[in-house]
Length: 327
Image 1: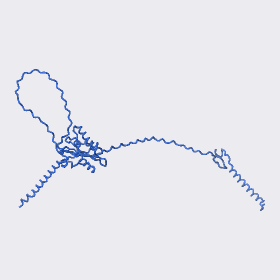
Image 2: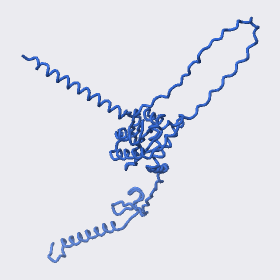
Image 3: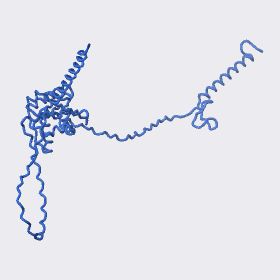
Image 4: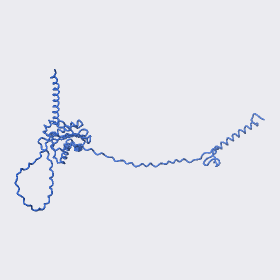
């Protein structure tokens, strides 16, 4: 029987159902909130069972182990020593360079038995002026005026020669001049008695050099070094005395003129026939020899003029002859 006040069977059943639901809910919450030690059959060792869950029970802090690798061993580095280049040789002045070349030239002549060359200031002034022209041009060439008639008369010379060169070192320039056959011939020419040398130091560090050799008219040749006397031949042993021959008839006296003695004349000196030479240090072992002679140039000019005059006369004759025989 059912009543509306809730005291019937239906009301009681509803109350019991609500009570059971609440009890089951509380039991579930209590089971979840209460940690229990898991046995070996339910959770693996090292875990805690929380309700139906197995949680890891690891309270130890993680320890990070840092392994520091030993530093790499580098091979020793050898630092090469700093090599300081030698300081360049100080440049000598033009006057010192000229005097140095004079000493070197006379030293070479002494080795071959030739006398030293005298220094001529007037010749040195001509050589210096030519070296200045070469330094301004930056190249070497010969001085035509030195071989002209004006300088010949001014210096009163009968033979002339010239060497020109440029180089960064005075001694090296001399060595290269001596290595050239033509330049060496000028330096060791026995006819020359004096020299003038002009040296100019250019802005680029090169020395421009002019050596003018002369033999003044009437000046004797430089005395040569005396030659060593030949050794006397060893004496032959005295011959054994021979048997005394029969007396010969007395010879008839005869008179004969003494044989004439012959004296070798000194070799003539040919005026103005010395070779002029040039030397460029920028081209090693490349040397040029240029013969120059004022008298030879004048002779060639005279011959050329005579040939031209003869050709002109012949052409005129060939033009006039046919006109004379025209009808």
